[in-house]
Image (cartoon, rainbow over all chains, first blue to last red; front, top):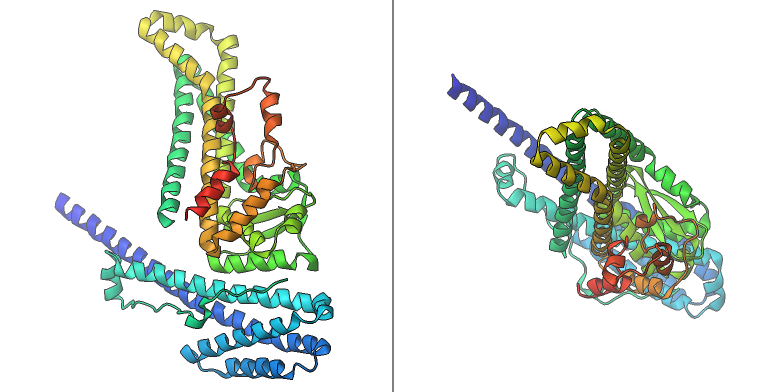
Length: 183
Length: 307
């Protein structure tokens, strides 16, 4: 009788543990998906801000045509790019053209004093921060998830329920040099 | 860096356990002194629970009102909002409510009971003095208090200190006015009984001091932890280092800060000299530091630079 009770208790505990582990894995996996969509939200926000920025700068530096065309083209590329590495590349190219746009703006004191320009600069800078932060959060989430499914005892359940390791978001090697935007 | 966070978290748990032990010790001491008056213990615990309940649900409102904080609305606070939003994305936290305190002294604090009910407040002085990366470092420090549940821990600490002080105080009062019958009992039980009573008496006198010392030590440790985990969010130690150096150079004192809310701020909002003189005597350096809510800024900067 006692043996039966002990076995029953052990089985119940094991089932409870399995349920808790499974739910934990599902939660962390969903967090990764959410983190991934957060990156897209911030990229979209940057795309939306750019036409406004180009118009504002045009008002003060109309003859810097080359820069405007480069930014507009890079933006269109980024919007139309396929998900995955091509998109990351297009977004990095867009970051580069934006940098040159802000560099051009440095030469126009009137533009730098324009409140609308300052607001847009603040918005773009913080959106780029948020892009970086959402990638960071995505990678942190992947790290936590991969640790869970590869360490014991999570690896047993991960194998049973087909949880597979996720990949990190890798930065563009060209982005290693620090970005400086002065205010 | 991650090990440092883990170690500090363990220490926080040890501290909370020590608080529980201290409260239990005071309760036992009261039980020993009043063989007939054990009823005080549940009463004291009930009062402590009532205090904990109030502070759990209203601590943020009280702290914000006491510091005269107003909601940070309007376009002039766009950078403040944007920086917090970015950091919240990095930390995976909901955005806390944001407040501003009209005060030229640069400082900031976090309050609330959990990340869903958290609030940050900064002084207008802080927004003026700090550049973007420095402000981000400070906000990351405050957000780390939210993420590490420091805001809840400090609430519990304040309540525990209050409960210990209250119980000890109640015990002393009953000792003078209602202790006759129990004293006779102890005389009957001989030498061991007297020693126990003396020990219990000593514990009652020392408990409030012990509780406060522990509160301060815990607060200092959590400041260092928040510095480190704030940098874990921004991945940019120079931002917070340069912000702390600016705070170091600034001597201003926040007007609407009291001893009670001192541990909430990023830098101690009180003047150090004033504190020593208020006690009438010149304390030794060690004792002075034992009652600080914040580690010296130089120490915090050194810890960050070592990372």
